[in-house]
Image (cartoon, rainbow, N blue to C red; front, side):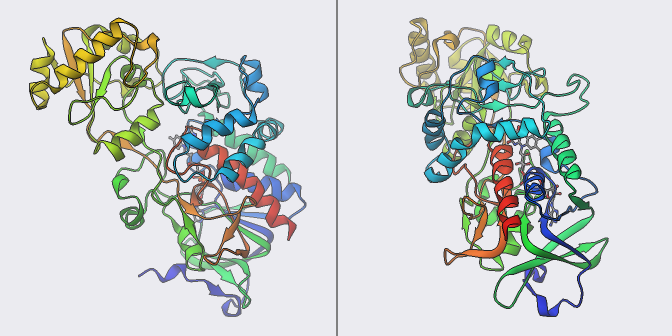
Length: 487
Ligand SMILES: Cc1cc2nc3c(=O)[nH]c(=O)nc-3n(C[C@H](O)[C@H](O)[C@H](O)COP(=O)(O)OP(=O)(O)OC[C@H]3O[C@@H](n4cnc5c(N)ncnc54)[C@H](O)[C@@H]3O)c2cc1C
């Protein structure tokens, strides 16, 4: 039993060790966005960070920020987009249960949010990268990151790339990731606005007035208990529960034991301390799922499931392929790829060469290959025959892979075993209003408590697009900071 999370009555706190108008737990993307906006609104702001420095998962991230609706970067790269077009895509791509009001709100504020990032000093290079990949190979600033140009999304909204990437300093030498290039100017902006930060502070529970209002936090610093008073509000910005095995087993068991694009500090503590006060939760089973193979390979082959059947257009966003594989195909996939295509994929430019996989089996015929894989006789042969007949005509009537990637599969033919090739992070968490107030199970906001980032349920429900996390974390982090400062 973890009694650490129980709310602490203010009457039991003998003295406060630290004090500010707005106290923020976590100095990653949501925390820094909240800090900048709360300080700009005139509040005295203190950030508590559990590790020895700012950054969190955000500073290690690929740095995509999902923005659109006609940002200056989209325009500079020659793409048209609108708020309605972006919302039409996100309302479908973020999955069943996506909150249309939140999606609409996020899309409507997207251009202003991009401008704010630029004002805070985040650099973007107006160059588009159009090849399949998890990220661009250089410091290009814009990419498709959600399958906008793949079926079925390309029939739902006009495809527009929305993955905005801060320009990296000397990416080749690995000096600074795009996530770092996002975080650094934001932290500098916060510091210039007077935000204070204390490190090695592990927030564990909320301090609460007798009327239920959140008045601060209790925490441990170097093992010593401390209490921090928040005169106007507390903002929880401490990340997801991807590293909390008990919560994963309870809410998102398919990803248990395979956290990805996350850090071990994402242990669900913020969610649990708010739950202990009666906070409501949403989308706890929703996850991002990375499919750990280079998209330059996926696009040149066909993906089949444990029954030897295709189930996704292979030019789809890899995160969606991951979700469809993990949740709908029992985490079983084989990439069928012929010798020429494999050679071409191995030679193709990619920022993730470590994800390029050798073939697990190579055979002279599809019949032999299906037997090597252990598939029932005939199923893979039928799949390849149908695919090849259509590909020869430049068509894919089954799954609508784009004609530019359709090429009949020849011999020798190989298969890459992609079973158990998924990893990811959680997207569910505290239920909040559009002003980032944490909602009680009664439906009313908990006075004095705000939250943003991956400890909340954000824009994504079941679906995902790369950049949504840094996107909604920074967007609703700003809202949290502003709302808390207003009290
Ligand atoms: C390698 C990698 C690549 C990624 N690429 C992308 C990408 O391109 N685009 C995208 O949108 N997302 C990406 N992500 C995911 C994204 O970085 C996170 O989902 C996002 O940073 C979540 O924001 P946050 O503010 O909730 O958490 P964070 O940015 O992790 O910040 C949370 C902070 O809270 C601190 N903390 C935790 N517990 C406590 C506590 N009890 N008390 C005090 N402090 C605490 C943590 O130490 C951390 O500093 C990537 C992640 C990784 C690791």
